[in-house]
Image 1 (cartoon, one colour):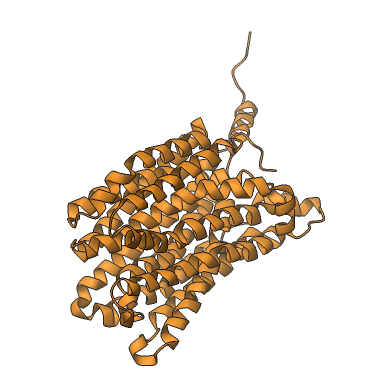
Image 2: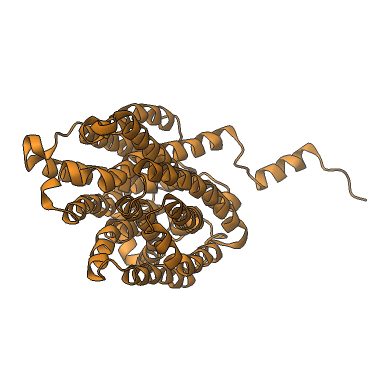
Amino acid sequence: MSSAPTAADKGAVATAEPSLNTKDMRRILASSFVGSAIEYYDFVLYATAASLVFNKVFFANLGPGFDLFASFVTLAVGYLARPLGGLIFGHFGDRLGRKKMLVLSMLIMGLGTTAIGLLPPTAQIGMAAPIALVVLRLVQGVAVGGEWGGAALMAIEHAPKKHRGFAAAFANAGGPAGAILGTLALSLFAAVSGDDFLVWGWRVPFLLSALLIVVGMVIRLKVAETPSFQRLEAAGEKRRVPLLDVLKNNPKAVVLGLLATTSFYVCQSMTTVWGVSVAVESGADKNGVLNIKALAALLTLVICFYSARLSDRIGRGRVLMGASLMGAVLVYPILVLMTNGELWGFAMAIILGNGLVQGFLYGPIAAYVAEQFPTRNRYTGASLAYQGASMIGAGFTPMIVAGLSLAAGGGLWLIAIFWIVALLASTVAVRLTPEGTQRELD
């Protein structure tokens, strides 16, 4: 006859099934979420301003179409710098620890964004203005390139195995949260400044970054280093250069992770960067477009958490492949709605493309990428794959799509093919990748 469970038995069960609902885990998840939100506030703020402001403030003399293209080139520069940031911060994050790099990346991002808000226009200082804008965008790119890997690993390496996808989503969810803050800030000051928006209104959200950075630094400094990295340090294993280790032992994981992540970034650029610009140019109200973009980011946030939790139950691969195939079916309807010149059309397009498709891709992707690498080079490997995808999928997409639109005489068919190919390539890459939900991180 079996006896009732003792207190020791219950304690053993609690130890065997750790929870996210502890004081330390709540602080860790809050740090990942808030820190990422602040950094992506800065980064997405630039992307939105590139669509609506910089072509008129820094590239006004290039003519219609080309001014926007030049503005998107500076946007791409930031994405080009993200893999470099991932490698730099990944190297030291794998050797010195995750926490130190997170604090440093936030500080660098805040200084760069504040400087953009103070930058005089081309009409005042000539070519020095766009050159300085490019340099500051490089600074932003390096900082956010180091941010994602550290924030994601801080959550994943602290979390119980069965909750890793959901925990990692807190780092990713900072992206749409930052997009909401940045978009609403730009929309608010567009309304407040009125005709002076291009003079001073757009600058205020950039300057507010300095205050947000202080808040983020206070939160991050209270978080402990991850157990996985502490165990690696305690083992005293002699570690080589993390990049060389990744390229020798995990090259397939980098390539497949990059391809799988690219579709998410293409969706992001198509809806929230190029889509915003083309909707306004087609006749949709600018403030309405920005407000709808913020609401869609809120939907992305909700779907991100849902799909991450779903991936903990059924696997990362199933969720990611399902989202990519759904997106491929919806591509052409989204493009038609986005370019019809009506606010309701843009709303439907961004809800489907940004809220639904991107949300389902976004939730599992952090855990999916990180689970493919061992602790000793995880920061470097995951950052290389993820930030490489950001460079290709987000950095080049607005320029590519602007060029495809010109080549097709304003038609949508070339743009649709490009977007569908990106989604199908992601599906194939995920299919070729081992499922990581049951993998031990150490």
